[in-house]
Length: 312
Image 1 (tube, helix red, strand yellow):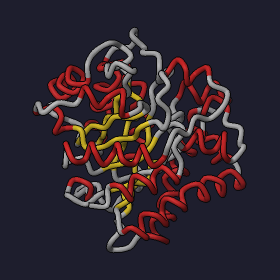
Image 2 (tube, rainbow, N blue to C red):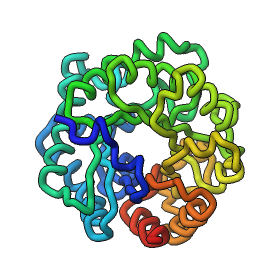
Image 3 (cartoon, one colour):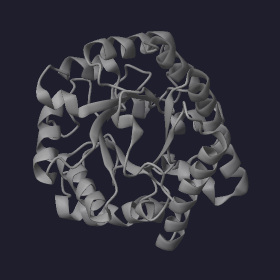
């Protein structure tokens, strides 16, 4: 059963860590094949499940060592119906793998959680299409209906919340929030930006957050930014009220654009120390930012740097 669904500890002042770029780590550093960038596919075998557990453990150890909270994000960014069909899974098989992902995180929490390191389990959702290419043809109701099945599976599990990462349109983000509200589970929306600090669909972060809040009666418990470098989105963050709704960051290691990353055949891990310093600068400006992790190209080195630079 869920532990924190009705009282999420990251809504307080304690710093919470996240993992890094799961898929890029598994592919480029661990040498695994992930068809369609789908980490959940590993859950179909015992060996794959063990590799996923091994992936999480360095972040668990870091959180315990530094006495930070930890949000355990499930490896299910691609575990929605359209992607499951591409991978040859039935909807029932997909449901089982989504449940299995939460079971894995539940076992990790039972084994490693301490009073100083609360561990929140988050069911991860991703965009229906390509995270870098907005699905302009999908409206709010269609998005809600598409994501409802995965949200319902997480709501019926030990997940404390759901988080939709790499959102690139207002409509899909709104639909996911409505699905989570229907399932009575807390939801986080994480938008991605291009190098100009705007969503791939062209709207600003301010416009996106204000629109989703207006359509859902301030439904998300908070917002995040992911899959973009701090150089890209920091100029868009202002002192206006909407910025207070942004509590988390999962930045890319690379300064490359989404188009450049799509064409890359090698991992660009950037500079972990520099990235950690940039997170600290963001925290100096926006002290409410307390959910910190990484996205593409980041690994345990980057999260260690972030934890170290944001120690105070």
